[in-house]
Length: 354
Ligand code: DAH
Image 1: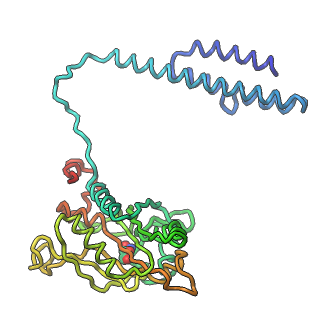
Image 2 (image 1 turned 90 degrees about the vertical axis):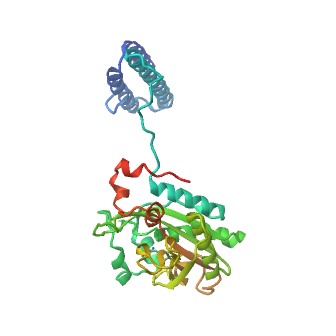
Image 3 (image 1 turned 180 degrees about the horizontal axis):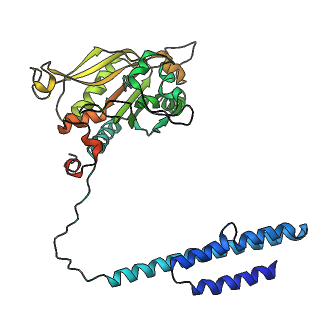
């Protein structure tokens, strides 16, 4: 085995020194390291030799494999550098005093709004969490007190994958359960309140028009502790919205139904354009609907492992689901929601964060 490896080593070294481009390097790699390559052949031979020699021979093969892999990488880097130098050398010299023609990239308006909100919530002690876009029925619906066949599902028709029980999340609320399980132990053992926001892309089977898209963004938030009440909810919402709109906003709550909160609300802000007198932007009502929210339903807290059957009201909390896309439309005066997904750089590159 030793002789065989030495012979291969020499052969490899001489072939490698003849290589001068990526294609022949790849051929050499295949000849030695692919499934049908020399190293695999050695492994097959290993099976045939007497047991007491196997250990040593196996080690030799491994060292050989590592050695040639390292030399491949080094050669690859060498060739890459050579290519680079060849390309640079062949380009015409350039005049660095000419004005630059390349337009700098910019952030998507929804990214801008999302980051701004993340900063605001972080400054209020919230953790920012990321959650997957593909979820299961339990997290998207059942853990949120929406059992199968509940009529509330009709409003959230989404896209189902061919993999059983996998769907594209129809709302960021789908992360609530996982976040409660993640932070619940800290709440119980250390008394650290759960404060988390989780932005994300959501999907729904919508008829698309200027106000509806099949793909949009939300930012969900929850706060859970002992004695959390609606006053806490109003305080956090008002503070956050005043920061976003850079002025003091007036908010009001109307009853709203969502199976995962009780009581549930629609939170409106007084129209920032007419100050509440009524104008076309607020359809003459003086108010703009902005953010559904409410006190987390006892069942949701139970499924999240926060409260027990015996003590179902030990902890309480609020939740809200901000429409990030809607907020970006309001903040930047975007009239058609489709603008966000169309990829038209003329439209999307106009926005800057404050
Ligand atoms: N998930 C709801 C939706 O997309 C919005 C929502 C309502 C979220 C009330 C909440 C809430 O957290 O408390 O329609």
